[in-house]
Image (cartoon, rainbow, N blue to C red; front, side):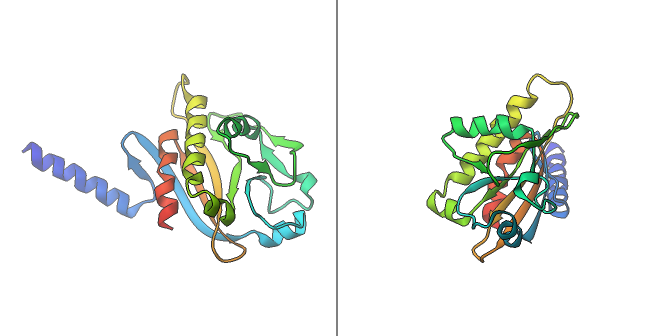
Length: 187
């Protein structure tokens, strides 16, 4: 009797995972979307440079007409300290940001991060390190708070073809962000 109940629960979980992008992972929650985008034209227009490293991307990248108009989420400042502590150099596109957007709700909005192909080739473990740092940052910002808190982030990962990127939008908790590595490597 108990064994058949367990089988039914497992079957429901498998069906749920198969038909949705919302993945139950133990006590975690994550929702994500993946799409292919082109950023190179915007980069050439705004920055006149090619991407060869790891960068924070502004929220208004597609609408800004100059790099001085870039707006970053305010969590960039604190998150960058975590990256520096982990010996990861990550620079905001367009140089040191001047404009920040502050949000007054329970969710954590992280700056978008771009990973260039050269960065991934030079250090195959960089993705794991970045996701662990993001997970630690999220965990540190939700511990001791009441209610369910989620984090939102966009990752842009350069594909082998020039100018093509995978845009991964993540909405979930600290534990779920670690699962992104498996998803990204499967793409």
